[in-house]
Length: 331
Image (cartoon, rainbow, N blue to C red; front, side):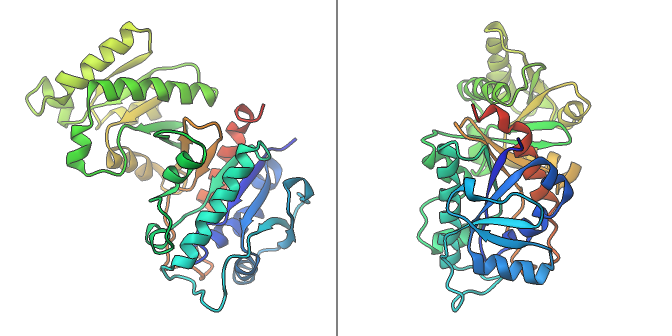
């Protein structure tokens, strides 16, 4: 049977609603997954109207009540958007709070094993804050609501997988966090995530931090003092890992199949490599949790929201990737 995928609608004022409805009519989605949307009926009806997609909304309370045939959008309606105060394309605390509630309900379904995966849409950090939501983004919400400490982020695009040693910190702080102990901890946990996804063969590469991986200390000593000792100790413990490999070549080598994954040492290092390769098909997976979450990796695009021109490609890819790996999370 096709896996059940929960899709929180995202920020009601952003492009989330329209990319969801566009994705659900795609043939590859219809053939691959059963989708249940968590959102607001009024906002989705509006999105269906201006995108002109052939969908009818079916309101359900539980996923087993859904009709997962062509042309049906199965919706758990939280009815939390007041249309008198709602405006597409505007940062709004009401929408930020609503977006959080959609995510929380999706996580509840996944925690209860009612769905096989959650595929998320964009949320807006300013709207979250304006709505009194204490979390800065998806990863932090999923970590808290699944009782997971420090969830891992992995990008996948065209078969290339990239993990991140650091995420939303300054570049200066990221350099300080490149330590032997942190690298060892992350490699071990990244390996666990890969095994959970069914990736058991292949070598993980650690990207260099400095130009040419520091040239043995000429351009910085993080590789000499931290990366290389971490790799040597991991290898001695039996882990299939190499590095540091210069960041100007490691992602190309991974794309060619030399490595099954890369540990990027800071946010932009891995983001630039993946998004330059294929922006729309770069999909985020949050790892290390008891549930599976895949996500588009773009923002709410408030400037084009409501115009019907937002691309659904990333949403489609996120759902397909959720379906691909979901069997490992529903036992």
